[in-house]
Image (tube, rainbow, N blue to C red; front, side, top):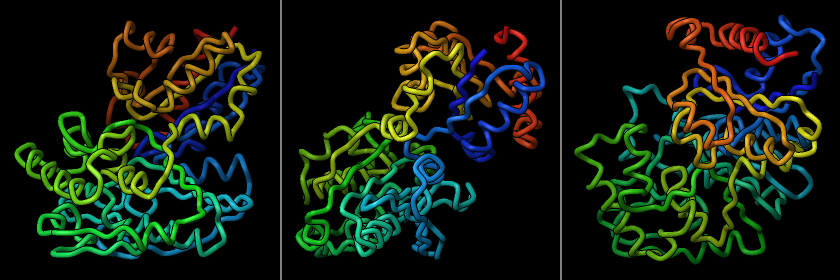
Length: 364
């Protein structure tokens, strides 16, 4: 039996590569004769560069950029020919700051702009920016400042709160810097910047924006959009990564689903042809999984190859009807198998056990 294993990261516990290895380990315990092909995936968030490096090779350039609050953090730019791949989460990821220290109203996306600047200085003519898993919610103002944009009346590098006193923004220097460079925003969501389905309302709470502050913070981003280009704020992906998508669209970037870009890079469609089963997974398999996330993307490609797709997850928060709508035949939960404490404390072995148990049903 040929099985393709194509999971995303399990946020906070396992990278996509580690998750794929754990699934393969557990599956082999039950079905050692099965032919397993590991294809770690990403939707543009944490692990984007690692997954692409494993698939494409290339050269990793080590750089240091500011975190959301100005602390230096290490990051890597993947150069493949004259294409650079950068990961916004490496610079301003939610995982960089403990939950009780997050300050989304003041966090800046400047570090992502510096990654792009380093890539240009290294000769990149095409830059693919993975968006997802970020702690910032500043509409990409910090990114624009790092690339040369200037402002009047306020600061572009003080987070969303710094946008309040702005009276003018000049994007000309930033646009000049990226002229002749093909920018691609690879995002896991197609959310717009503002409103009830915008960056702040949908993703602000997971970054630490409290319910009573959502309308206020969204108003700050609206003010910034009115100073730059309100029409662009309604574009698909403008709300990705706390509005970093908006900043990139202002600079002329094109937006593409991150999972599609990674699937093409790792040649997932070719690898699932003739597979008897495709296994995907992520930390939390829930309703958001149908909005550009890895399980939905993998299931869609598996369906084209007429291969059944199942999901292994830390927790499963959708019913059987909803998961089949996403193209997933069945989903299995680590928490249900071993309990939450063990699933978090020993994620690798818990996932391996889940895979071993699942192989009893699916391997033949």
